[in-house]
Image (cartoon, rainbow, N blue to C red):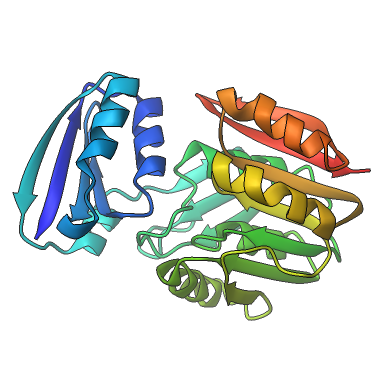
Length: 268
């Protein structure tokens, strides 16, 4: 049995916030212009969580019990190509190739986080255009679909390690690496930083994990290296700047899309 949460009167930004909040436990989403349906296994559903989000974002919601469904089919029906400027296009295998972009990534549209639709993934890809990846070592911490690791490879990285705590994400990332004819990326299931050093570290996760992990990531970053962070709301910036400042990381740039931000740091 599954729980369907129908959430009404939402802005695009609020939908993005909710999708990010439910990305770990949800089995699927359905979107319209002003509503979002979230599908969660009954045993994973937490009534207190939806009530707390409702009070913060001021939305109406309705909860219904429903039988099992084909969640991948639901996910695919909501998957449209994502185009980041003229830099990169992200599409499913059932889409036609996208013209007039420098790079194209094919993603199997399953439930792993990171298809380019969410503002944080979009911002990460946009900022990656400014980084010199040629012959560099890269750590994609919390890889999700593997989209950022794939883009790093296309931008010339020599060594890429991608990790994620979620078994489903590891499986999906592996499939996406194969779909893009990439066999060189090292993929590991892990819930912590790895004891290696890198020129570039990419971390699109969430505020709490980043605050806990930044000291370890800073130690893994080589001098003059780049740390690119997202999964953050604008209100998270002061806390992230404080932790990064205590770990020899200097912010070079902040970009914003809706309520979401991406922060670019260099290691002293």
